[in-house]
Length: 104
Image 1 (cartoon, rainbow, N blue to C red):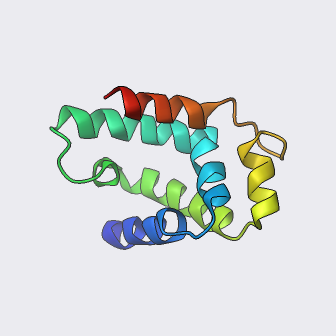
Image 2: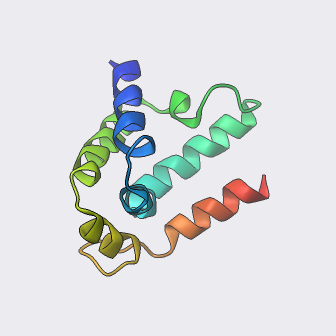
């Protein structure tokens, strides 16, 4: 089940044609928190595999649920969320995540 969820998250978000859907997903505070933890685990394990390989089943389910929701957004809705003008607060978490990845 975990491998199927990982593949679907990647398909829904990373392979999504819309950069705004990606930005909105990654700027979600819950996504950012989970991915921050997974990136730390991934880095401490010599960057073997991908960060999603270190997710628990619960974390994968949360990420999958959110990926499904964000993948169905229009570009306008996703852009509003990515810029913090939508229903959810981004708190700059996308920028924080990018900074962490670039520093490494």
